[in-house]
Length: 391
Image 1 (tube, rainbow, N blue to C red):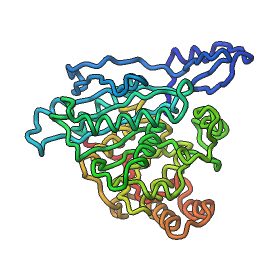
Image 2 (image 1 turned 45 degrees about the horizontal axis):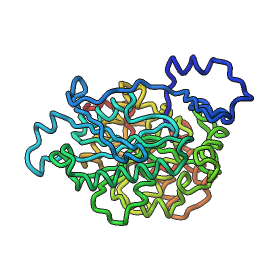
Image 3 (image 1 turned 30 degrees about the horizontal axis):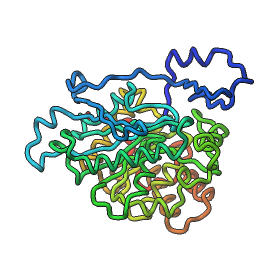
Image 4 (image 1 turned 120 degrees about the horizontal axis):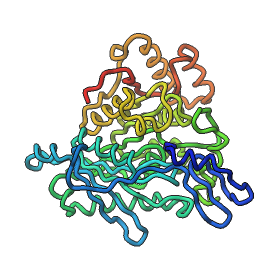
């Protein structure tokens, strides 16, 4: 999903809308009118690409992935890292990134995503391929998945592109995204043949998963969430669709060896992200779950200077560069967070051991840490919200 309402969109929202003219009111993202017109309520400034790195430290340029369907990508090259790299061993990891926006808004060229990708490229010393895919409702699901798959195939097949050919390491390829983009990254990974050597890891930031069972959250009401997926698929699928509500067997069979899942404590999809991470761990994957307590959906994009956002960036950077810890021990978690982490590990173990009733397992976890815990299915928790980052 992911959204940010700017001044212009708030002004638009205040305008009186004739209800008789609206076919679908998907506020706060968009309205579709009976005449077919789509009004997007979330607006961002678009940023031009430039091979001069400027203040961000990353050179950028746009490439065409699929001229027929209008699929593009923006490449980000960290110039300092490139200058320091020498020889094959100095090549940089590649991150194929899918933006959020509920599958119906957002762009790789918008201000928040441009600056996030540039920052990630510089701090992780990685080449970022940020994909601009087609949006619903003009292009219903599965258009976004098809475009993302085409982008990954382009990356794998196009190391003849000068930036990829000279600076990227095809053996260190990551799929990443936030919100709807994290859902896309998961579904693209699910299409890979098992043992695909080129994909080292998966990075899912506040992944957008949903289903018939519902959870509360302050930013997106469950009742509104129930209507989103049918709208995005033009009525072709409901909330039991395995693309939005993947069953355990789909998750445990993902071919990626390493996965980072980041959730926000106040997010309506937080518990689902934690459960997804637990299922991954059951599938013998190296899983890191990072929870940003007190935050809601998309916080890291629109408040990048916050301690929680900087700490999350730090964790993603460490993951890309292979510096993640395989397991958190109680000694690594300070003070009151120790019991919280232990309870969440116990709950995760219970889920993986016997697949007991979800409500019962959630109750076990919260009995000793009601205030501290948001999601009860955490396999590995490293809380960095108040920690000082090295970035």
